[in-house]
Image (cartoon, rainbow, N blue to C red; front, side, top):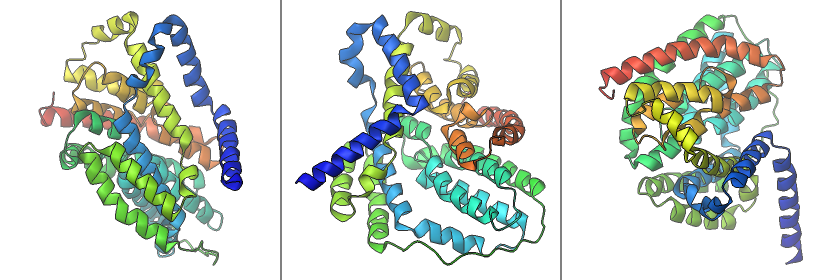
Length: 382
């Protein structure tokens, strides 16, 4: 009994230290403190401000993706694919496509955690431009993750909010994602030359944990089905018990800070949305008009990031189809548009990476916004 308690204490202490250095969490806590001082009577209502089904679905997906990641399977698959490319252009296309495809099921940030380490390792033994590749992978996960309800946190929130079937959500986003990926692949071809490339991999591949991989894969589809049936909390409880029995080490390794960020975002943004000044300003935007709602989603994402933008706009409109287009397109542009952008630029390890990112991402935002607006008009959403 003493050993598990000691391990739990170490985990809690390390987690607390990590969270205490997280600028995003500290900022959200500071905002919450100010809002609490303005309306202390609201404290009892804080738990009801959190969308717990969304949090349950996000937690379950983090557990499943961490299981797949820890199994070593994705690392082996990536090495296998990269070993078969022979030019810088083909390598870039392979990595961009891999990032986009992984983001549709493993979420955009998890896709980056898989692809970027492979990219940086490859760049150490080739002449590939590491920073430029990371920038394009950030663009790729923003585009690819827009396709599915589980590709990114804002889609997960809107999916749970709308109660739309999984397939209906994908069908709505498919035209936009198809055009965005076409534009991104064309830009990739233009940005990376077809120079020959020689890759030399070492032999120190991580061991494959077959039991963990099989468990995660077998649980993935049932969890999605239960989440689609609005039973995410029960599905999370069952998933947690199974992983505790099979590989208990997976649970403490998920991004608990990310979960806390979303809880704080729900509380902060819904408290802000309830302020009379904020309501008056938002009402002036006339968000019942789909076109206004779309541009509000794009613009708000550039200021507060697309996840809180989706949460905030949902307080004023239930038109999830328009919000989904606006906030997913809003992930491009400035680096604060999406948390995935910040993750990618941090992992790049290049202090000037943000310059390269904006050189590609801001024009991509302008083009994407025009495409999204036209598609919404064509689909008669607006």
